[in-house]
Length: 242
Image 1 (cartoon, one colour):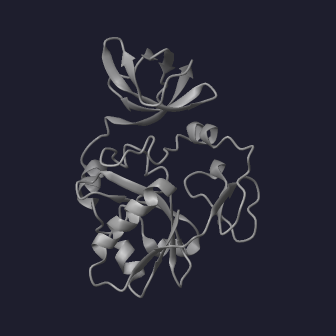
Image 2 (cartoon, rainbow, N blue to C red):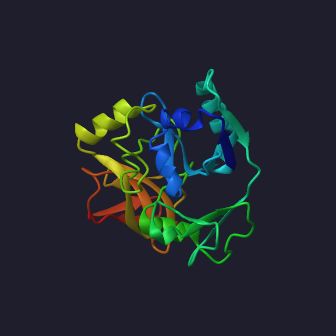
């Protein structure tokens, strides 16, 4: 779903809410997120600043709730939040005119708006797994995930210099005052297991296995426990720290 954010206060409004500098959207897509005041993930999305408005590209299932949440913060600001009606197309290789690069990782190609027809032969899950890119509603869980544990620094999804936004204090503490002890990592997987299967290291739970493709998977791991050969249901799991 692509929301359209318009009105004279649109830049200032979004800038005070989301994890990236909205002004940076003028040079292409910006990957960003909205958090709870407690610093937990609510939704991730792309922003495209077209000068006369801002397009907000979010997973379709999350669009209506995100629009409702944004409206809660609008108060008296001159801001319009509406469904743009635009479709989204993705592809690899040279980007057609008017399309923009996915900012999370070069392997994810480009996105276009108001066009039709994803490339049907692309295994997007395999590309995500290889680059450890979390998916909305799968590895990224509302009211539960923390964006730094999900790799938003690596994905250019958070700007630690932009100033205040919702959940900024918690995110800043995690960045500067603690060492991450949990997070998403790519693991080797022999066999398959349902998304959300606990990963066991002996008798102790070491994490959760999510998307799998081509003998690899994305896992949320407790780094102090994730060692050696682990088990996730019927699948064998191995993590090799970078």
